[in-house]
Every structure is written in C-alpha cells, then in structure tokens.
Length: 118
Image (cartoon, rainbow, N blue to C red; front, side, top):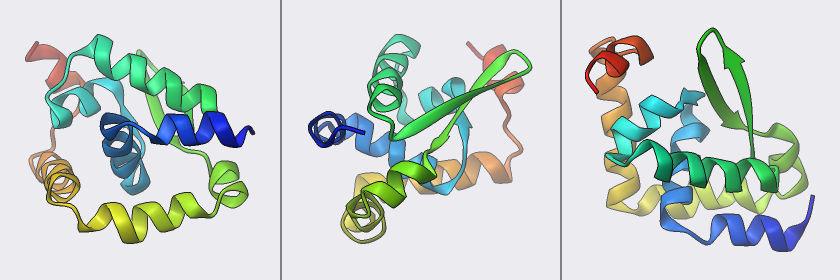
C-alpha cells in the first residue's frame, strides 16, 4: 500500500461518495451508477482508481462485478474509517446517497432490474 496513491484516490468527491456507499455494503457498478446518477464509464474510472490504490476490491458474481471496502486498507490506514464514520457522515450529499441506497433496498431493486431500465 502506498500512502500517496491512497490519499490521491481519496481526493475526489465522487470517489468519496463511492467508498461511503461501499462502507455500508458491497455494490455492483450498476447500483453505484444509479445511486450517483453517473455514467458507467465515469463510475468505472473512479472504481479503477480506488481498486488500484487498494482501498476497495472487486469480485465477479455471475455477470456482475461487485465492489467492497478492503479490510486490509482500513486496518493499514485507520484514518479512512474515521473519515467515513465521522467526517463524511456529516455532509448532506453523502447522507442523501445512503438514503437512496436504503430506498433501493426497500424497493428490492437489483442489478437485473437496473440493467433492464437502461
């Protein structure tokens, strides 16, 4: 793990929004796209930076790729947990993203149903 690469990965609002969501649960690209209302290419580019820094990992399940927070990164850089639990949690945009995620779950929206809506 490289501290400079990690800090650079965290220095973007979209990437902070993504890890804020992934701190709650593992998500696939299409779910992140829908919650952030962003394009697949934009979300994928940000996910690649986060994955390359070691902050997140990816796992293929069926036809979808799911992303999650790297426990190793959180252990290595404890400030990430503090950043998410204390600092990021205060901002309305990040709270709205989590509320949207909860709403999707309550509506049983899945990758398959999102894929059909594109």
